[in-house]
Length: 269
Image 1 (cartoon, rainbow, N blue to C red):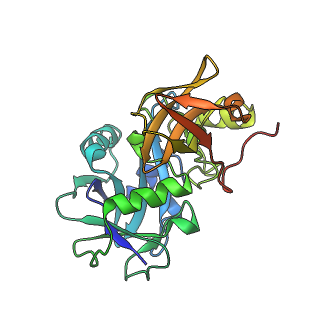
Image 2: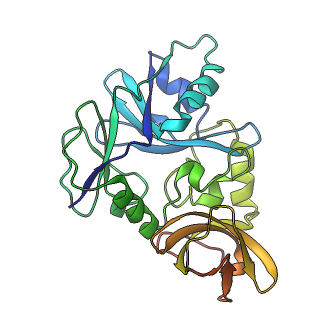
């Protein structure tokens, strides 16, 4: 029943009476759904609908806490602050004060923890100044999320290039299709309803030395994708959908085998 502290995660505070309405028009999911015991998984997009950052939104008293990549916290605060205008909102980077912990495999949830909103099997998350004692390392959590096929922010997506639906945001409860407009909504909706998706981030088994991120993936002599993150024989790869037809895939000196998880919905045929 492992619990790990995740040092590469940061925390951004969004406080003020307009905090929910402010974020609601900017991020991909329904901010109003965040409540004690319930987190919301969401992303910030460019106006053109390309991915910029992802985070978990937690409601705590009179503030919202964004559990985000630590390296992105400053950028996220700056981007969001550009849209404050007259909104009664205050943004603070609390990455030095608060820590993020995760538990999985049946680890009991401590007070203040929330189930991971993406998948039940992912476990729970906690943002706290006094996290619980850890009995696992961040690397163990990374193996866990790779085994589930969960993409991990900038390790698997490319800012201002990636699309939400390429990373399974629909299946992983990261997009609201009913809440109304948000920045970048048009491309996201068009991609879904017109069936425009051509690539997916797919978990892969790696036979051989783990390729570096960005290494091209070949089907025969044709390039069909590239490697993203990985560890200990598991990885995430961006692949064209036609590359999921069972043909051998080479990446550097390794062979890759797609592992389509039960949660992932791919086009028929």
